[in-house]
Image (cartoon, rainbow, N blue to C red):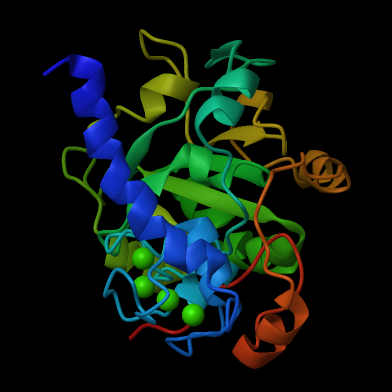
Length: 282
Ligand SMILES: [Ca+2]
Ligand SMILES: [Ca+2]
Ligand SMILES: [Ca+2]
Ligand SMILES: [Ca+2]
């Protein structure tokens, strides 16, 4: 049998399987599983029209789609940290904007991945469209502690405008030890994303190699993921720069919404806006 004939035979069952659904006529836009998303929209975004929680993570397909989490990935769910999220730039779109990337001032920032204090994955690129403050600190550092006093307040004031602080805590009370993130969070009532940076891998992206840099140390990324301010050591972060960056419009990110988007937002209690807060933990 020729290769093309085999390919044709392999394709045929798919075609016949899809035909009744597409051409059914009656009830094409029903919501079979009652998760608020119509069957046809679920087919468009790749979720199961007959299962309200496609990936089984405890959040319905609509809840995940409307808070910019993946309804098809059980590891990704509106989670404990509850950081506001916006639509993620994916695949080719990400490649197109991240062409000229690097780690210095004026560069489109490369991405990195680590875990937050809740054990959830944190990816820098996940915050594309937000103004990002990367804050290197340590528990032993007095000036870091002084800055920590007001950090949560500054974060909360701007969170709905699309601001996020990613605080990388390098050391514990003794510089030789890793930080105790729970203790650090308790000391300053922090809810912002906290990460253990004791291996200095994230820090190495933002400070000159060879040492000689001080903490607290701040890097600020604009909504377009370009490093606007790099290697600012000491004091508090430059919030006037942050506010001027927040005044800029977020870059466009394509995202699919169903026709009844407003009704579903009402039903879920999710506000319209680019930055949406996740639900409570389940
Ligand atoms: Ca549905
Ligand atoms: Ca579904
Ligand atoms: Ca789910
Ligand atoms: Ca999920």
